[in-house]
Image (tube, rainbow, N blue to C red; front, top):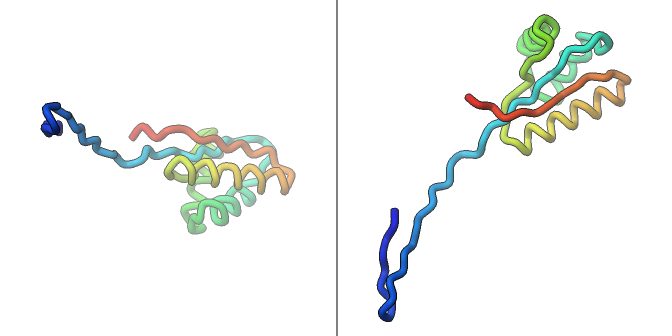
Length: 105
């Protein structure tokens, strides 16, 4: 909404900007032939705070489809959780790939 305000012979225009909600980002888990299913469930429970049944369902989806969504978060949270997951996998000797992409939904 634009509003005109007169000040000493001038016409000033003030524009109001609406700030929308931050965009959401998906953290994706990618299947590989080396990372164990047990580790993926452990990662989903610890890093992504999933309950055991949900973690198992996500792990199976990743195993069957090749990629799955670990969670949807704001960008900073998604990148932080993906990095924590990468670090944990590396520390345990697994080549698990986690990526972050914009959620179009």
